[in-house]
Amino acid sequence: MYTTIFLQTGGGSSLTTMLPFLLMILVLYFFMIRPQMKRQKNEKQFQNSLTKGTKVVTSSGIHGKIVDIVDSDNTVIIETGAGKIKFERTAVSMDLSKKYQAPIEKK
Image (cartoon, rainbow, N blue to C red; front, side, top):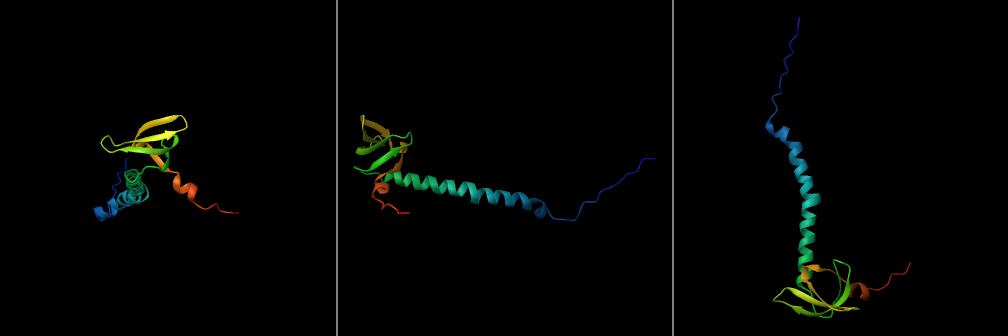
């Protein structure tokens, strides 16, 4: 009374079954991993190129001007409105000097 149905598997190769997964990995690499690596490289290059007198913003949002760079500790001393504060180089996130020197666009 019971009917048995046998499903036949196609003679497809393992490459066709793995192709969607390989494409997903490729898309993840080119749209997520590669841009993040590029951003990290640019940020590290920026932090290594810091000089005295540069107006910066830290990752915590503190605005100030670099007054001293201590290479042995990998730190910078930033002068703010409240005084001088010592930060790690990695805490500096943005250069404001270029932003203030850029010409103002008229609408």
